[in-house]
Length: 320
Ligand code: HEC
Ligand code: HEC
Image 1 (cartoon, rainbow, N blue to C red):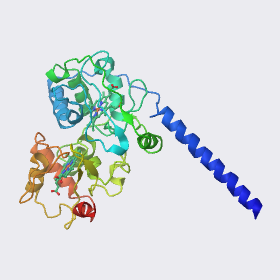
Image 2 (cartoon, rainbow, N blue to C red):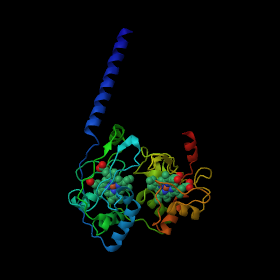
Image 3 (cartoon, helix red, strand yellow):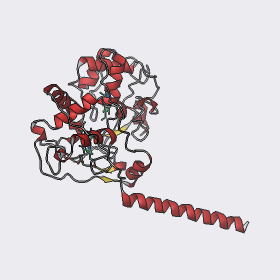
Image 4 (cartoon, rainbow, N blue to C red):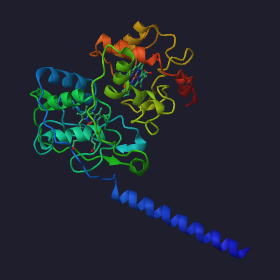
């Protein structure tokens, strides 16, 4: 008996040692670095691509990277869930030293797809990744970043480095890994195939699914539909005063989702945050006012085809 106790004691000590050593390693080493393999790419953007890149940047990038001065110089991200630590978005103005001026087109493409920066460091989970974006849309963003726009005027300022918590670093070892760079060209979806086009907007281009699935920790970026609770909402997001707002269930469930919405009601909510007889949608739901009616209608058509999930988001408020 004594001998067994002794063996158990030694085993516990070994496990405790491994855990402590692992934890020390993760906290000291921080977010992991990788080898970057940027493609040989030179984007020749025309005015249509620049306009499309600017539209997408306005819908996605500006929310995080634009400072109060209207410049893409980065800022403190006030609405980061505290369990991840503190974050500042990067300076993505055209500055040669601190902005995207130091990136090649290939390095930008590599970062936006995989999450690995030019120096090999991994852009933490709070910087979005675009593995499924079409080459045309990706190149449009790059063409925009290189174009003459007031918000991209070089700002010679190093943005503060993020301060991830142990939990965030730990997740970067076990859950958030660089995504594979596509081996083949990624074609643009056919806009007349409404459901496929809508899926592309909702999962690859505007990232509705990330916020609208129950948590970022379990989201499956490579195969969005495999995300547990896909589009059923309940992701807890702090607003700018730290109050928790839960994302809504966008599955066609009649009781808890958007099963009783008309297409028109859905589009009004998506584009302008407006709902009939209910308060307007709050931050951090971004108003998608500049999406086209075809895009909004395609997202609606796609959401009609996903499995209905009963998930009562209002009950989450009641539980608190
Ligand atoms: C949800 C917020 C968020 C969105 C949306 C977002 N970013 Fe970022 N981005 C960040 C944060 C935070 C960082 C800094 C990460 C770090 O610590 O390295 C970052 C880093 C970067 C970097 C790395 C710069 C460097 O210094 O190495 C580039 C380039 C970039 N973002 C471009 C973009 C573009 C282009 C878009 C839109 C297509 C975009 N980001 C959308 C939050 C965001
Ligand atoms: C940054 C996170 C975020 C992103 C990205 C996002 N949403 Fe939302 N969305 C929210 C939050 C939070 C709410 C709930 C706001 C509230 O309760 O006031 C919401 C609510 C909604 C609603 C209202 C549903 C209802 O029950 O009335 C619709 C519709 C919606 N979002 C559609 C979309 C679509 C479509 C996209 C992608 C184009 C999208 N959202 C992207 C956070 C997000």
